[in-house]
Length: 328
Image 1 (cartoon, rainbow, N blue to C red):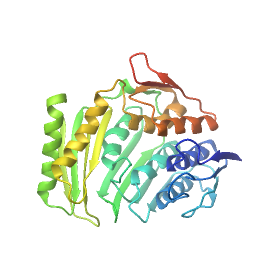
Image 2: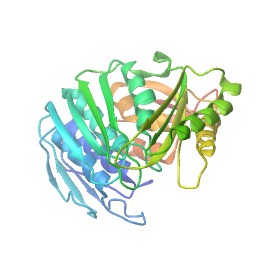
Image 3: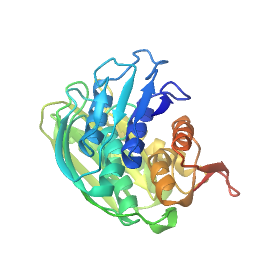
Image 4: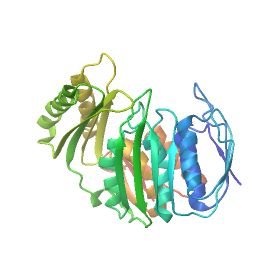
């Protein structure tokens, strides 16, 4: 039984999600103690429970301590299997974070998942970042994966719904130059006037196009649904930025904030931004390769430590041209 300190370094939910994914992939049980011990509200939250359930469904795992507030989790995986499952987070917890745990496991045996929760949430990747950046990068390395965005869900009510299906396969070694993504903006909203998404898009374009040229993708996605909110996701190559709307915050400010986040990453050396680096490290550990990123975030440092605990060593340090190089 492998024992993992859930409070180590960043000590957040990413550690739990990745630990159970690695346990499932390696076919070995794991115990995670002190889960999120340093956080204001420690222990498992609904989105963490949902992520563990998603991974457990891929391998008929026996799990102890899988409940809200639990600070200790025991995960005993069985053989990987192809399964079609539905996971309801029960809150506006991040769907993208559930997928982050599930996808590397599902790539081994294939399968599908429908997740209900938040598609755009504070401090987490938007579903558009997953759909327009993360998944195309993985497809460029051989993954057969598709995403259907059925409903958007915003804080606090959630209710978003996403379905992802994947075929089994082994990826090529991770290399940033395998993929060319172009540039784009998706401006989205639910239960708001149509002009909101148009104004968000216009502001993002006005900030981005003088710096990077005409966008390849400029889309609006106005919807109705169970929750109200807005978001902007933008990307240029393997860098991205996003911003969420909030009551009393002008639509133009949301578009500019997303564009500013992207432009800040574009000013830094490296092939991918720090958030995409976080998404790629587990695949780098499993399939080998090398890339450079704009920075090594605390999330990334925690993940590198955790991967090492499972026997997957990643070397990292300053890249010759600037930024951080990651190699496996």
